[in-house]
Image (tube, rainbow, N blue to C red; front, side):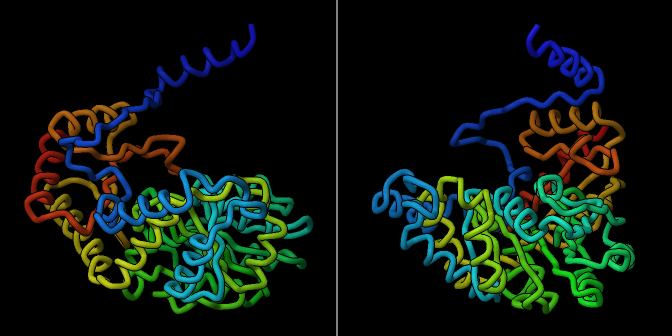
Length: 375
């Protein structure tokens, strides 16, 4: 029978407690949301939604084609200019998603004969970029610059190291300065995914590379998503102008994909301008994460110390993690639930995302619900 193996895999997932389901949310959900990635609370901000609506009225519901045909509007180039300037890079290129941006950066910058050194804790989009690239990939120990240095030292050709700046599972930050130093010792490039750093780290939310003093370097390329701190959708690659020009000509997820919808570009641009005007939002997101961590650990829960806005709480097993998240939801709190294979160490977690717009009462409520529903 065609696709008969699907039933076998489904049965294994059920027995392992790893079945995933879609839960459509209503526009007016009563749940307190600590599961989404709206770090700065901008997804529903009036200026951001008006930016989306204005762009849709002006440019239409879709971009009408790939970026190299009809999919590039004046709005896209305006967003690219302002995003690059804000983060401290020479140029930027906007993609339809952060996933597509990561695939583009890794595959286009790791040709045949090159070496990719990838952190063991990297996001799936970076891992898939490594799989699709023509270079050879070596996985380095998590957040270990010496391991990166050793891998680079064994290769005589072009090379690039690839890492998240803030890892999405536990919210820990990569040692960016040391990684950049290791790469420069061997003439290698550094590709960083700053999805969880933009809007939270760096001066006024300019990102983890800016905070580390490596933004704008000619050997550093950074990817970002527009769907987290900027409350929109899409992604971008930031870097030297010659790298961005290379991506325009070589990145398949740019050349063969329909351009980002104008509404998403308009929302992201409005959010970026709002963040530039209200930089205190970035500091607030970090402060909320640290308060959540302090209160959860005071309750005796095992929570990872956050370096940005992600706080994870360990669960005893995948089944208990799912039950814990469901019990939280029944008590009015939405939390993320990370289980294998999404977690590289095989340890299931509740994943909480701090938001700059959370009140003290909401933080207290979230901690109380998590504590009361623990397995």
